[in-house]
Image (tube, rainbow, N blue to C red; front, side, top):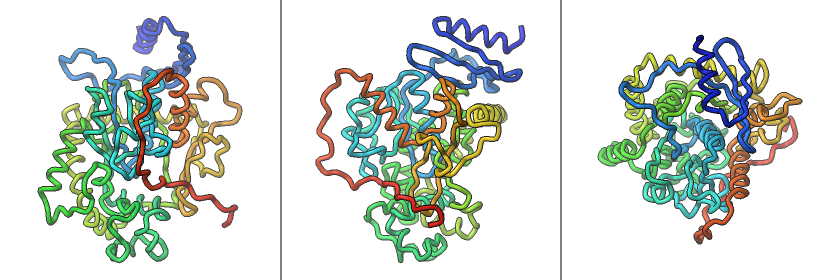
Length: 431
């Protein structure tokens, strides 16, 4: 029997209590339309995996408890969307912020379990922005939770931070003509430690990870070494944004997920006009010392990620990453048309897919659904491209409806944090 028919036969046995519609798309890709109760989902399924399980390892059930530390400007929104969709498909509870925190866990304050909406406790999955606090997360998440985060090369990350938060970080606002070069030439002329959102201008990764972003590894190498040890102890996987697909392969292996569980659409991406096509070498040389703690965290984490790939079989991981990219392209075409393109928010008709815009100077792109779509496939495509704010709100409403009787919430925020960043209104075209 051909392998694809074997896969279909196996899927039919496994899904005997569900209504299944198999749509063959080419010779090796199958889509499943699954109706289970009131839940409907559609996604490519059953393309073959190149990476076998570790030798002598029995099959493992999918791991269902994951805490993802969503760092800033590292492709974390795309990872969050993967986790949100997985949680929905498996009817898992996602920890979501209390309304007073909006869609982040009261960042930039240290995380507290008090910041979690009571209708979303106890959770299986956590994936919204927070400042890491190990004790508070362990208090919230169940035993056996897998902790994961993602890092990005510090110079590229800093360029993105400077562009995205230019209207919110006081250090960036002071720079004439919003010039990154000018800031990096003399950061001390613009930066004030302790200001609101000052962490976006200095060692943001270290801050997100709960560290003191004002420490200098040049003056205190032991501090950086301790921060690296904490990351290695807590996080079962540190993904690397520059090798996103390879990192997703490692993630799915760690969690015993299928490759289709980590299919994605790129979210929260800036338009080409809002970013540098490449970081000039001089800027990179200046940005790294400015963010020396971040560089000190990134470099060993990058090396560790590739050691993990080597232990899984590097050629195997790269082959599976290629299969992931191919399946992703098929999915994007299926959802958004034969030539799926990222669009400016003003061109996206579907309100639920319009991405949040940080300022008039930055365009954040998104996908739109073709007109006339309806049904479970359309719903799944909508979730695939749904921005963070809309998806968080949707999940909170859904979990509140199914919650039933819950424990009374703990007192929240006697000292409310500064209001989270809000979008600035856009002017008329041409302004």
